[in-house]
Length: 392
Image (cartoon, rainbow, N blue to C red):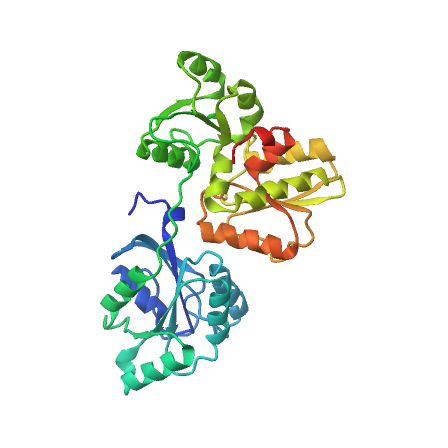
């Protein structure tokens, strides 16, 4: 489990009112005191994430959220954080603590609209009398099975494990689906500049390389400076060349005509988001001017460096093309504007740190706002005039 990337785990979010027992249940499920438990309402102030192995599912991330009815001084902000969790929830567990579901109803409706598979629990059943009739009435009114559990005593936990395992599995996806097969030679061109972590490869490179090995491809790695020599050492051109987007133009010039060409960022766009939407969004680059406004969104948060692609190189490319007056806003991590309408284009990173649900929620928000959205690699290829050469 520890070797499973955070972005590759199934994200299961716990929702419910203050004191509905979410934190107690999280601790019961993980077997640890992962979340603070208190009878005081509003104890959970921010989403709490805990990695674990779920029986019959594998590596998951459990997310404990603030109460839906938090009335404290910061309650509105805490509830807003809870709602943001919907953007990344692959599965939802909603805890009910009585037959009154008025507060939970808006959440349940939004979960249905977002098509997030949801389990309903009647929690704290150790405190209840006439339990079968309460469960039956709730199930009839909500139109869905309600599982009785107790995070305190452990009652119903085994049934909860089985219910989550029985939910529809996630779609299995591959980074290099349709681009190569077993036995194909794949050349990975990987610059190791100052922004690359010392002594290790960045996550998209590691993830791609591991997948190629699992698929029994012949993976070769080289820096851009050694690409020509590497190609000369091969008997035949590679089936596929994968590069870092920041050297797209240099690599494209050396890539044999018979080889497919793409980038790690484009692969991530295929894997995590809607690649067709991103390619269509790149058309907006033709319409930008010095009066335009662009949002650049990074999944990871880090201190900018001289060679940072999202905060330095991409803005420099955009301003060189459209003028220094071009307004560029940059956000990192889970920060993302609620209102996208002021923007003429959103350019998102490969999102190797996000799960697919979160990326697709951002695509949906951009679409709803009528704002084009594209991806680092797609945008760079378009700016360099080689997008038609790139395989996506």
